[in-house]
Amino acid sequence: MMSRFLRIAVGAAALTAANAFAASHVFLVQNSGWMEPFFADPASQYKPLVTELVMAVARPDDLMVLASFNQSQPGAPSPKALMSAKVTSDSKALRGSVSGALQNLEVGRKPNRTTLADTDLNEAVRTAIDQALGKKPGLVWLFTNNKNSPNNDQATAKRNREFYELIHRGQDIRKVLAFPLQMPVKSKSFQANGLMVYVFGIQEQGARDLDALVQSGAIQKIITESPARLKPLDADTVRLHPKGVFESPGVGFSMGQSGVLLADVNSDAKTPVAKVQWALENSIYPYTIAQAEVNASSVLAGERKPITVDKTVVTGLQPGKQTPLSSTLQLPVAQMPDTWSLEAISAAGRAFVLPGTLELDLTGQRLELSPQFRERMAQLFPGDPLPDLFIPPAEVKGSKISLPIQVRVNFGLMPLIALLAAAAAAILATVGALLLATKARSVKLVVDGQPRTVLTKARQVYPIHDAAGRKVAELKTQWFGKVRLTDIREGAQVRLGQ
Image (tube, rainbow, N blue to C red; front, side, top):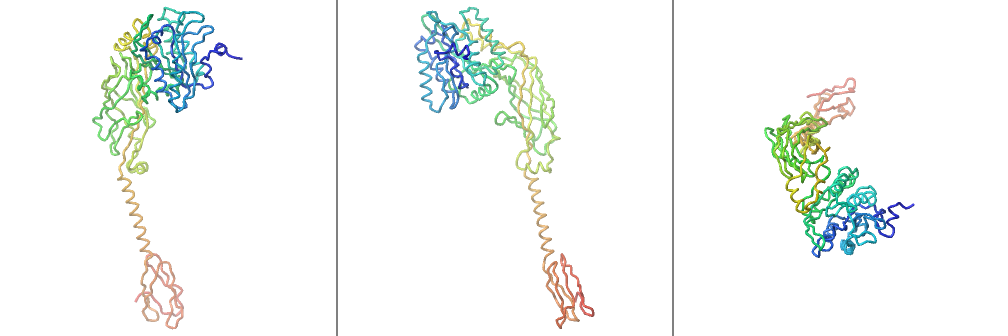
């Protein structure tokens, strides 16, 4: 039996039509009545923005749905799919499909009426998550003027609060970024100064995909505005930048690739602690860390150790700004291999690595929207209470930051060279001994009063004959030239020496 949503969608190309794809991108384009100037103003960049952002973030083999939304009514479902596709490497075809789907999009109206359609942000996002994505990982993009007014409800603050609840407490929503954009548009009925683009990372994989997109710079090619983070607010709120090491000879800190902290320790440095100067940066735009208590620890070689910091309370740290922080970090000296150990010799010429993490806990955390962000929002959305969405939930009172670290003990080539030299010496000594042991020697003996000389080699037996040709004895040689006469014939006159 068809679901209620599918029954409503039949003949209307509703969003669920893309379910077979389990789309990885869902682009929701608002076309309610409040959006009228974005459609009517000839200079509006609304549709071109949507097209260019789709082109920037969609990759070959991605699955995508492009849909308009306002508020669902009987006979007029919302969201409504404009196109769905599996992205290919043919960017020209994708651009044509997206711009063509948007070209005919107009402001929505209520069924059988001239009244402009209302807006329901919650419904649009929930439907995208539940129906288009099937609650599977993906990204939901929302293009809106920030006016949430289902059923023409003028209590927008209440409706915005419901949207706030969806963002912060929706279990499927793991990460949310918002891009407030300046886009002045005007029509006979309305005017607007700005537009908001939200992107929701659904499930952990969706959050990772969003992080990868941000790091790739793909979004920034189209939107140069810094993203405001709505969720999560309890992780990665600060960054640590090593600035120097003091009173710790033979120890150095630097940042490696992928954000891994590298602690390089000379093999002869047995300093049990490292005193490190950091820069603590607020990385949670657009929030000011009004106050937070700082606690730090390390997990190295399987052992958790406290890190002593000189600043236990941070106050008034603006987004993107830094404050100095000194710390005393205990190094796992006992776990570092000895210079002449097998581990050290096998690591000669490279680093012996002890992986671990540095953990920073901010407790009693109090976040406030920066004044600059409030001012910008007031300019873009005058009289709009939606910036309340950015106020952190009361239960978010702390955050945890985990920084991967590698303690690298740098062993030179000397232990290996010394070992190789010793091995070479041993081999030479052995070869010399073997040569000495097997060297041919001249042995003098006397047979029937006549001196003789016999050339011998180790571990060989030589018969000794008298003048008449009779065998009178055997000469046996051993290692290192030792010889003896055996099997001497009775009455024979044979002896060693001259």
